[in-house]
Image (cartoon, rainbow, N blue to C red; front, side, top):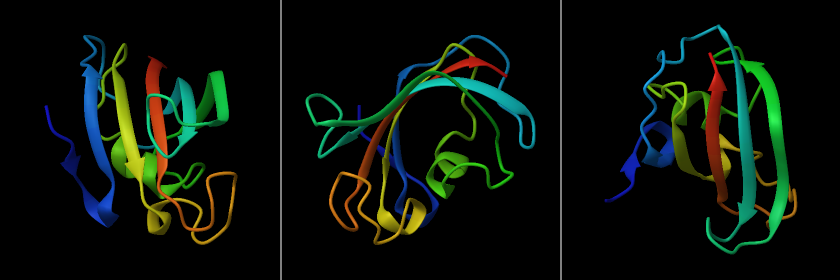
Amino acid sequence: MEYKTLRKGVKYIDVVVGRGPIVQDRKKLRVKYVLRAKNHMNGKVIDSSSNFGFRLGKGEVIQGWDIGMEGMRQGGIRRLIVPMQAGYGNRDIGAGRGADLYFEISVLSC
């Protein structure tokens, strides 16, 4: 399997395609995520949550999530590679200034 590239250079690959409802714009979601530096497998963990809530497409999260989570289903697990222009810009949040961000996101509810 290969990563697919979306707007602003966001890349994704589905680890598990969920069987539940598809996430909807402007609706509340609950997710589990891990953010790593350098790669998905053994990069340093920068941030994580086992139950994070937000509304997709409302600017409550970085653009990389709004772009990269489109089409996900409840129960799905997706890996995102978010470039700086869709993440935190040139700010260093622990991965280095302007570094790509490596997320693994699981949709718990939508």
